[in-house]
Amino acid sequence: MPGPCEDLQDLERRVQRNAAELGQEAFWEQELRREQAREREAQSRLQALSAATAEHAARLQALDAQARALEDKLCQAAEAPGPPSPTASATERLRQDLAAQERQGAEVQGSLALVSRALEAAEHALQAQAQELEELNRELRQCNLQQFIQQTGAAPGTQDLMPPARGKPLPGAPRSPALVSSLSPEVSPLRQSWR
Image 1 (cartoon, rainbow, N blue to C red):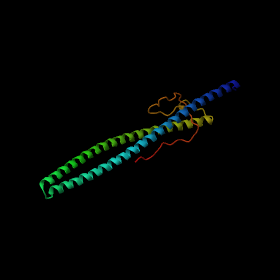
Image 2: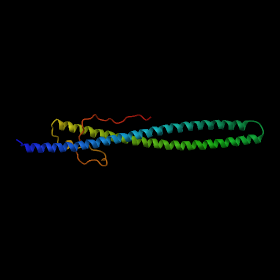
Image 3: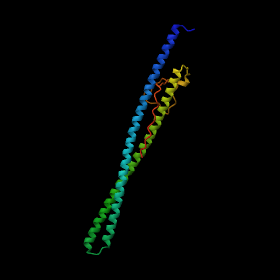
Image 4: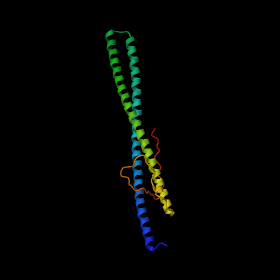
């Protein structure tokens, strides 16, 4: 039978192991909170880009309506009888107005294209952050399982204590493979609709 010294050493080892695992848990929970904050920021930017896209589309529609109205006036001025000089002058003004409206419409279309590209990039970034959030949640679930196994007295092998494989390691992540959680409820990733 093991003596008191061996029991004490075993308890000390378990205390040290639990302390290291609690440090791992704190690290992963902090990473999860950071990812959630980044996702909220990306969603806010995405909503702003969507609003800007809608505004540019409305302006473009208004410019198209103005251009059609100017074309109608131009046709009416060309067909209306009267002195040639005032008609020519009015026609020239209408042509200039129409050209200005077309230039402005082209500028709005260019701006709308830029906003659309930025919107698409923000959507890709948001999807990547959501995937990162799911990976962090899986790691926290693994931590919960490991602590439950330890609290019930089972002795998992080294392979059971390894964290799930990640696509790329987070900067500053602790190198100890043992992870643990305080059996806190899992934080689900944010699933907000930005459309």
